[in-house]
Image (cartoon, rainbow, N blue to C red; front, side, top):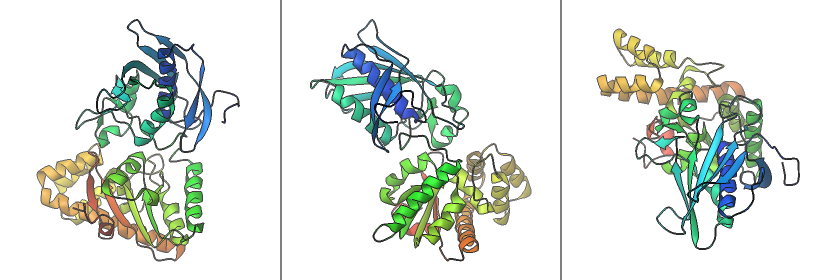
Length: 376
């Protein structure tokens, strides 16, 4: 919704609601009266939109507190109605290496298990900077403490722990608008973007299909060019076929091993509401590597793919290493066969997978050409 339209826009990601509360809190520090709406400069897509803020006020110590409430729009989203508290306080403009805007994780906000740092995406930081820097006096910076009162309980219903995020919800996202990964609209958006790339001068010869926000965040860190990335959501099969038909000559699948494992079993829509089969696929591939029955039963009964693989790595690291290679090889083979069956075209995707620690876990034979510097 553009500036000037009716307020109360919905369908925004968590970083947008954090930014709305942060802006309201900083306005209190500036001595401005509370307004029940804040006009934000949004990114990806760019535009100005008005968003509601429930309350903002100065605190006794001179800090300010503002509260917004998440509205992710239609569809299933556990952040619906989530209260977002942002406490703001003035500080030195360049008081430390954190720059003029310093972030702290309050209760319910996810932290990286490795170093305790707040888990926030580059997009969320950019959004805060775009909206807050114009409000800061030349000689002042601001410290923001974000609290999500229900964040820790809600995080237990997500897979964040599988990516090394603890204590709450991550402030991640790559755009202002919510894009439901299982929605047909999400598939339509991805197909439209693919067609636009194919129609551009030079076409779309190389493409990286990325599953999930974590994949988008990690891809540049392992050397994958941002301009080649296309988020798939759970609609992997149709996008594989569309890539072949669009003239893609070199393709990589990049995602979490516990998600893309399904492709090794021929499951090309990966939302768990439609199909799972991960335990069955993992157990079958382990059996082909020669794992004994008792160990197979333990593998099958594990609560998660990651837990199963960690247990196997502890008991038989050599076989676990062979299983990694078999998994990525099976995904590459099944994906190429799917494309051939659906389109009649020959396109052989490579595969690269990361684990719960957000580290590269395995790279397939064809995927190795994409990541020669880091492939294990």
